[in-house]
Image (cartoon, rainbow, N blue to C red; front, top):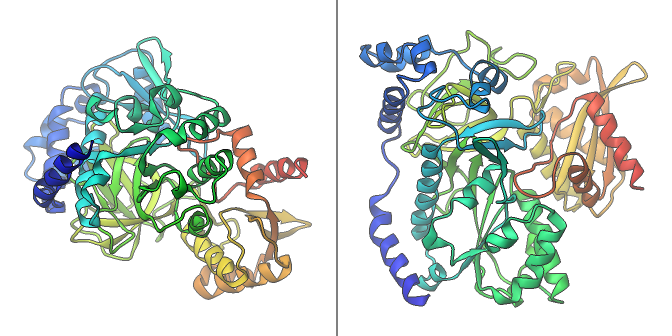
Length: 506
């Protein structure tokens, strides 16, 4: 194992230098051209005249002119439902082996096609992430130890001519053979569908493993670490895994969990952010001096950016027909954009639902700022998740609450509108003072919110609950573990049902 670690380390030192980020604009044009060419004889390619697009003087402009923007509902109803019925060559050449069941927080499960080309693109992106570890100055023996990847079950659902599961389960079931000796919790435990049973088995097997890295959504990783520590009667996780050095986060922001993570470890970890969605491996943090992630610009995904705001998104969070769509070459730094992707899974000009800010255009680095549907604008408040996250972070620091989760909704109560916040913490504070603090923070940082407060929006109400109860709601109504995320924003009716469930736990 040590010798293999030295081999990997040397390979990274040599090839990691070569595999630097390509010129983003040039790489993106080549990716798009290759995808259009490969899909030109599919039903989608024929419908939108991909062959003509390739012959155009500006194939990029022709592509944007001829192919409309799609959201999931349009993509599925017009095209992807044929794949579920067994048809081939619909939006990408060939048939369909996998469907990722998206654990989206704004709708029911979605069926996202995952082609062999996408599986290979995800594998290539993962290798790129490993190569970038040379930038984090890790010792050679790190690369010969075990990596614990906590995701959804690899026991995929078999349906007719395809298999279904979450993207983390599909990816784990396609791990290369050479890596399986280092992959934990191993094939047997990874296939367990029941979350509590899976974590119990991990805690039992933990002493046998030499874990150097963790990967998974922060809330689920934290719950797993607590169980391992409790089951093995430890003070911190490094007593059983002394070589643990790296935690690769993904799905949600890690920052709210840092305080609680620090209590579970015996020495500092290197934290690396990734952006793996059901639609593909979009970006990963490649250097230690930033929290931004580099887009995978040369690997099966073409990106477009719609300025968020300026009337470009309707009240349902969908991009309007006349909205401008920019490429990585045209964007500006520190501006919010709605992200569109075209992929080797046959998603075309597809609105993934996330908003991002470009933090470094030359490196094609981004930071996720929220969801197109996850913003409040019932009475003109126009609050993005990014602004809400910042307000909660400030509240946390001011009252020392160790907040991990929150959910907000604009509620009509006795003919007056309020924003109600359910905040997850094991501590407590005066709810009225907390409401005033959040209100002041939002008024200082959002002029639209300030105007709304002088009109229809009467104020803010706060309720503190245990994080465990929020996670139990997730287990009951969505799913615990895997890629499942807690929604930051709910519609009023959903929020009322959410509150009813939380009260039932008291």
